[in-house]
Image (cartoon, rainbow, N blue to C red; front, top):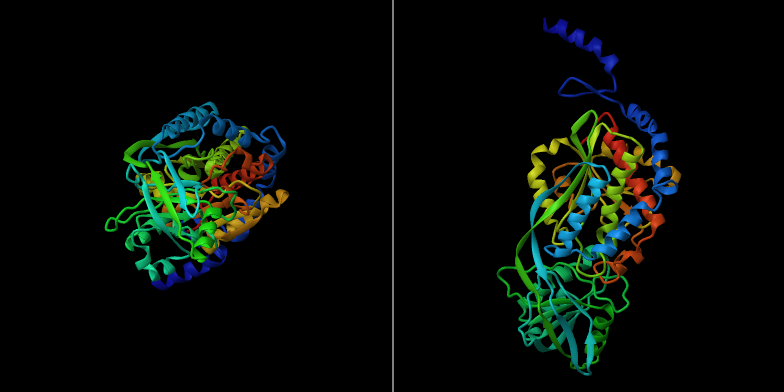
Length: 469
């Protein structure tokens, strides 16, 4: 009997050649079938591009962001401004006619910088521009007055550990890349405290400066003394380095009134276009709504949040309804390490198999060139085909690895991820500084970013099969 079955099965093989058997006995399409399916979205992609770049929605994401940024301003975790921003977006998404608009509660850090200043006393009086780093402790009420030791690396600090005791460590680390150099911001206070320093001042993690300090989060360790820490401008760090190299004694007075409060209630903001065929399956587009407490948070990450909103608006305006649910999430407390996103992940991970792709835009909305993508080879091939639909605006590249603090939780568990890839040449000029304002944003570039974000998210949400993982 078993041989009869084997002969029967082998006779069936030719008609299913090139197809993959699923657990539910349905058959996946061949890659050629998938290419043809994607090519069928050419007209829809053109319609999205025309509406976003040339049509009635032209400049809409920019104009919406300008009203929001000018009205609300910077939105630090735990602040009244962030509360106002969430309420504003909740109403705006409802008024836009999106579905299932709701808030999902989370707990977020609440830190305030308070009054702060630094003054060089020797070799001359000079006001040092500073921005306290997130979670920093305050100085004593009278401040700290101490001699400075300038180092260019952690290695140099450790070699000069005896000199550093009782001093203010100034890091004049050269900027190589954000990913590599940011360790001095995040770990600088800990490493300085280990050698007995009383405070640390970190050269801003910036590729260009006009006497502009750039803030950011930093992390203490429980078993190491917590000392005050702030960022200073590239210019002041280099000046003190030159002085130190000449053997000049430098004395600085530092005063910081930072406070850390108990965690505050906040929300991730969610809206959807519910899928027509597989509503339980999710294509997630996102940006973070919080920002630092300087500038307007227009670039980081107002632009990413608002092109993600725009993706749903464009799809709705065209009367489209994808097979899967397209879900917009505006994260909270990203700047403190993806706090809101982690709580969202914990709440929704039981449905992880229904998440088709997670997308986050958090590296500016400048001139786009493509997408960063994390996923297996088959999924990458599909993504490359989808990107060919964006040939009319010459944005077709697929780069290695998606980047997004808020979507990392999902990607680590195997969910495909995508991030917007754009021109970062000036991003770190303004990042986490007073310069992050609407002046940085360009409406034409935001139109292109919105078109990319919309075409990709819609096609993935509407294809018959989920991306392989």
